[in-house]
Length: 130
Image (cartoon, rainbow, N blue to C red; front, top):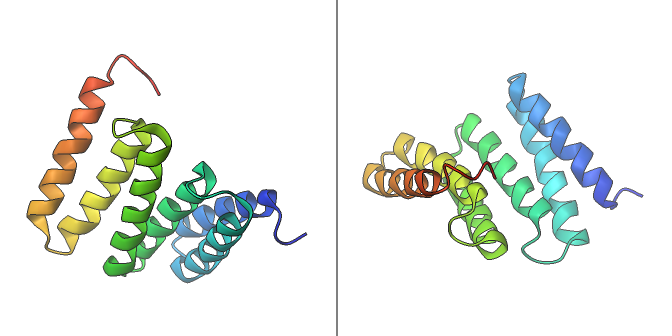
């Protein structure tokens, strides 16, 4: 059915494709649908929901919607921290995305803090490819 986890996964991939092609309106529409399904079919703080949020945050950023992008990145960050702890690679990647949006929105001090935290995580994890 339309609310199946596999549908959310495929919609997420399609949304990324639209984003890469520069069709940000379609990307946002499809990724919002992917997130809605993921939030419905997976338990709270699930990896797929966090991924859907991060992908949507990136699409919002490309569509010049920084407030929505920041909010989605922050939600994804909280989920990734709950799932893998504060030093997981997904936390660092999400912090990097969030910091890029914050910097573009003029919130440079917060962006610096998030970049520094991401760098610290990645530096500590240099021997761990995950």
